[in-house]
Structures are given as structure tokens and as C-alpha cells.
Length: 224
Ligand SMILES: NC(=O)c1ccc[n+]([C@@H]2O[C@H](COP(=O)([O-])OP(=O)(O)OC[C@H]3O[C@@H](n4cnc5c(N)ncnc54)[C@H](O)[C@@H]3O)[C@@H](O)[C@H]2O)c1
Image 1: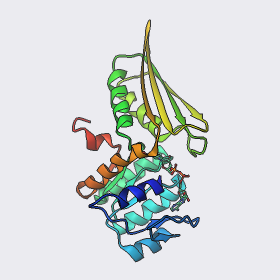
Image 2: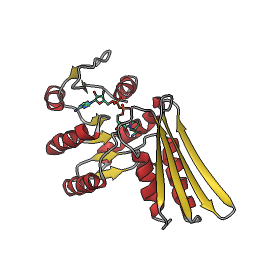
Image 3: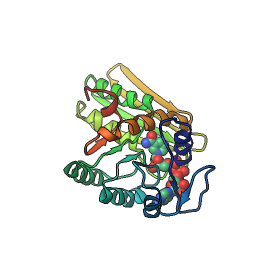
Image 4: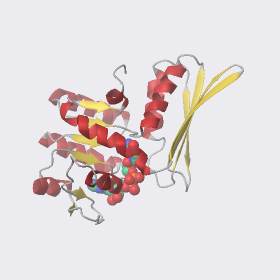
């Protein structure tokens, strides 16, 4: 994801990629790379940091950017509910701009919105999420977020099933049931390019963000 974001920013006219961070020495064509975020910030003085790393790395990166008041756009998943609540409060208190979205694909955001709407009419629902075998966290951040949104209108327990297989990118089905009928809402990301318009949208909105915004739906739809 980091490489894909770098290529996208490099090919976007009004954005300048000032550097990239990878502690394991990964090189990227045309990108000044650093092994440490603090060193990168000192050398490049960016307006915003985009984070697609691991939950463990993100915890430390959030603290570094928060201390500097440096805005962040975050796609990394795997933060706990407690982490999110802590950061919501810290960011809101300081009006520190940070957008965290467990899924930047527009279709996935719509899937979550429609699942929330449908949940008001159904008594039970289950979520099946499918990702590639290298994904570190399970259930996915998208599935947890979908469940959280559906819980606002559906009281029953919502089970999440996680499938990890080679050949998959990021897919999710929400199946809602009533006696005699089911409704299935499905989204498929078949390529990582699916996430890039959402990342660019978040970057375009970060300057006007105050505190933590969790989920792209708050940027896309006024009524959520
Ligand atoms: N929000 C979304 O739309 C979305 C979409 C896809 C993936 N993701 C999430 O984004 C994250 C990354 O996904 P991926 O598929 O690119 O994983 P990946 O394992 O391919 O890449 C993670 C990268 O982070 C680097 N890294 C580790 N620690 C670091 C640190 N301290 N500083 C900088 N870089 C560090 C690793 O070297 C690695 O290159 C995961 O949490 C994944 O679930 C989110």
C-alpha cells in the first residue's frame, strides 16, 4: 500500500512526495527514503504524513506526529477499540487533524452505509471478510467498522468470519437474514488502486479537519 500511495502522489499534480519511510531498507524509484520517521520529518518538514504500516508501527507514528501537531491520513488497521478511543480524545482535545479510515475504497464505504441502512429491517446478520494470506490482523478493520455501524440499528449479535487465502485482495459480504429471505451486500477490491481515490480525498480534506475523523463516510456523506 505504501508503494501504491507513493506512486499515486507522484502522479498527482498538486501534491509533492517529499519522502518515504521504511525501516527495512525498501527502495522506491524517485522517492527519498528514510529508515526512521523522526529523521524523515526533520529532513523533509512535510505538511501531512500518510501511514500504511502495521498497528505496532502506527502507535508510535501517531505519537510522533501528535507531538509535532503534524496532520495524518492513516489506512493502517489493527488498532484496538481502546487505542481508537484514546486517540479520539487526544486528537479532539488538541484539535489535531487525523483521518483514520479502515477502508479507503469508495465501494466499501457504500457497502458499510447500505449495510447499516439494511440492518434496521433485519433481525440477524453475519459478515464474511476475505483477504490475502499476508494480512496481519483478523477480523479486518473494515469488518469491525461495518459491525460497529450496523450495531446502531441491529440489536442481535453480528458474527464476523475471516478468510485468509492467496489470490485474494480485500473482499467482504454482509448477509442479513429474516424468515424466508436473505439480503447479501458484497464489495470486492480486486486491485490496490481501488483505495487511492479515497486516500487523495482524505488528503484534500485534512487541512479542514479538527480532531480525529474515523471512517471515510464522514467525509463522503453529510448525513452520517
Ligand atoms: N485503509 C485501507 O483502505 C487499507 C487498504 C489496504 C490495506 N490496509 C492496511 O494497511 C496496512 C498495510 O497494508 P499492506 O498490505 O501494505 O501491508 P505490508 O505488510 O505489505 O506493508 C507494510 C509495510 O510497513 C512497513 N513498516 C513496518 N514498520 C514500519 C515503520 N515503523 N515505519 C514505516 N514503515 C514500516 C513494512 O516494511 C512494510 O513494507 C495494513 O494494516 C492493512 O490492513 C488498509
